[in-house]
Length: 148
Image: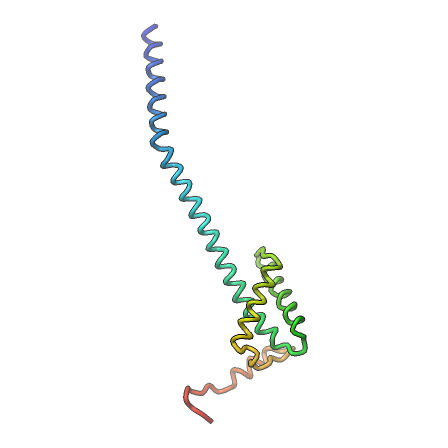
């Protein structure tokens, strides 16, 4: 009986030593693996954020170009309409962007539009964009260097 108890105690001690050794060896490896997963997760979240902001910026560029053609509105009305429309589209697609950020993106789009001489575009009709598109499609494409 005493042999059985001694064998059991020796087995428990041996198992404890093995477990402690394994923990000491594997603990840094497990911590490193968890840190790598966290870094990848953060990196992916940052990439999604950057991609989302690129999409919102391109959308703002298009909205600003369209609103800039509405000559019946004042500059501030066009800006506010652009912000409102951009906010509506962003919210519809589930983005959560602060109103201040949306205003800044819209302002940047207006500055970009203005600096690229965007206000020389032909004014699109108020009510029917299809007429405007048909008119643009019916205009002949001239090869470069050919003059009338």
